[in-house]
Image 1 (cartoon, rainbow, N blue to C red):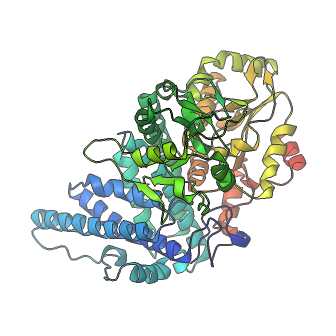
Image 2: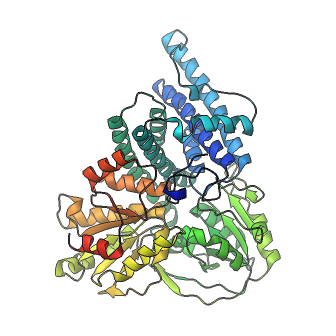
Image 3: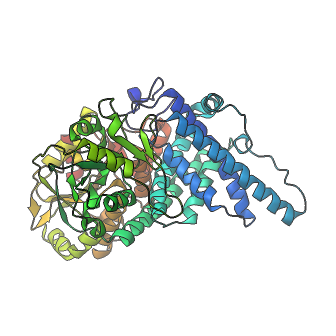
Length: 553
């Protein structure tokens, strides 16, 4: 295996023996294989598109395949093999639909040369797939800069795919986004592709990242209402409990409906915290609070919780034996020997009865005292107080905004973000989304004229709110360039949705971003020079030096 798609890549280079995330070499190689055959599927879906043939199942599956390989989603050999089988099945289906359409229009068989990924098949299951995955994986491109840009593009595509899939679950789709995923994948099959072509594709990915985040924002707010400023309790009650982690709001809603009247209290964890701010979810009185913090604390917090646990999307940490029997997965999440809740069929909701049964069997969990967190500062809420915010900027009460969005991680160096937030001057406001906020959202940072100094827009999925807020401020102040705003960007990254957010910011022209805790291992020195020269991206240094950098701009 060789994997360097996350911030915690071993030695800052790449995981070769086992993933820092817990992924085995077999799973890593199978995931490389899945990406490769999905490139082959994409080759035929794009050919079919040219001849007026569209297969919705195949188009969506490209996004699902990409999403299933994001860090901390899937650790299951069995599921990876089934994903590859499905990709090959759909590839052959779309291929033949295209070939028939080609003959009907051109009057002759299609005889162009096609990439190996569009044709390869060898029976044998996991062993054969893994061997091929080792051959076609990350290191198959010998040129370091080409490899770096291809992987930057692919990781951005994975993030876009995650946003697009979340939106699709709520019945919101955009074919242009799905076709761009396919275009990006197919272009990485080209042996003659140039650095300049790849840079243009990376920036184009930023455009589609913005569109995907906007689509998901529309899906969430149309379905559940605009988030409202809300206090969320972080303690637990002496009653049976289910803890829901991940990002999928529909899973949470269906679980809430199925647990009404059972005496079960439902709690959110990690990236599911923002669910409490949506009006259509707040109405469930047994949505009791939020327990725990960011994803990497699961091994301690899940054990401590004591009730049943449901993982809905990425951010799963391999569970300990001591609580494995009460962890359930659903959607694209996979871990061998955990109970998996199947997808919806025939328009019916998922059946969460195994989770409910386990919660009732376990009985009441311990009661714990908790604090209250204030959330719900998505773009509509900020817009409602925009006059107040603008006035505070004009009077100098607010000197700067700091976008501190992105991911959290387990390493000690992430304490930088806690210290940075705590040492920001009292005339600054933090705009955040994602689990990076767990480094500072319990700090007592106060407010500025009633405006809290931490404005939490929600999940990493809600990063679009930060974009909208910035663009609205740009318009309100009559500025031509987003970089003229008193907004600084100190972004923490971990996985591929954060890469998509970064590409979105670059597409919007944002410059001077600090990125940490360390720069991506997949960015080569030459590619880094391009990013520094064109966008001013730099790694974080020390809190003192970075505060001086931002405050003296």
